[in-house]
Image (cartoon, rainbow, N blue to C red; front, top):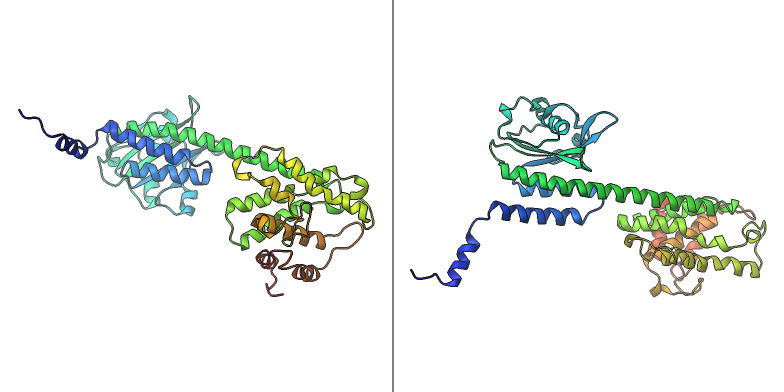
Amino acid sequence: MREKPIGSRLTEELSTPQTDSQRHLEAMVQVSRALGSIMDMNQLIPAILKQVTYTFCAERSSLFLYDAEHDQLCARVAEGLDQQRTLELRLPANQGVVGQVFQTHENRLIHDTKKDPNFAKRVAQSTGYVPRSMMVCPVFHGLHNVTGVIQVLHSDPNHFHETDLSLLEAIAVQVAISLENAQLYEKQKRQFSSFVRAFSTALDARDPSTQEHSLNVANIAQGIGYYLGLSFEILDRLRVAGLLHDVGKIGTPEAILKKPGKLDPDEFAIMKEHAAYSMQILSQIEFTDEYEDLARVASLHHEKLDGSGYPYGMKADELNIETRILAVADIYHAMTQDRIYRKGMPTEKALGIIDDMTPNQLDEACVMALKQFLGYPSSS
């Protein structure tokens, strides 16, 4: 028998339906890509369910996490439901198919929910969607503890098969690992945030006249960034940079920080050194990628666009938007805050001085955004 040409054989191979193992491998690769690139819990869970629904040609997928305080399984995300109804979807941890899987730690494949006595018709009817096919798998935390349940739904009976259930079980393992990593990441972020806040508070406390200055600068900087339409990631960087911008004052003598009168030229020269100290101190901290270049942003809040600022006399082309925002936030709050040697200026007067510094020294767009944040017309 004459052998088929290579081109013909290759065409046949490419047009042959995928085997279950091939399809499962491709699905696992896609799920791994989706889950491996996201650490934020609020983004992670929707990404999980979107990929799961697509993988099984399903109509809906849901992830329930266990609430130990109320002994309930709570839907973090339920595709097809609006956010409010998802938040209200809470099930007793021992009821329905989801509760059964949570209690027994065993997978369930239901070909027709009408024939299953554990199917919670009341819950399905309350959501306005009654599935006929269902796959449910536990999501483990560690080897033995179940932290939640993932379910996949379709309105046709016999839509899912045993091979699908095996694949969902494998995906559930990846989901568990991703959730644990995301939870660890969130915990680390909370720890970092609390450290930054505590450090900032301790520094401000050295000078009673400037207590909470750093917190206020951080809030104002975020407000400016918000009205400029910057991303959440940049707003978060502004918050941290604002809280740490005066860290260099740890090297400023207390006699200067707490002097009840105006500083003389020599004392002011020493005070100005705090910005360079901020750069030196923060440059020694190994920040995560999201806070890359934070030392530079935080320490350049006294620089001016025309090069008249300090500590380095940088000009406009060397100052990014975050640095420009912090400069406006810092100077506004410094002028309006009470100090030992003077009362804070009224907002109108401070904005007038800021207007005189714009656009030669301060960024015009940042000043306009500051006024929007404060509720003042941008033309004032």
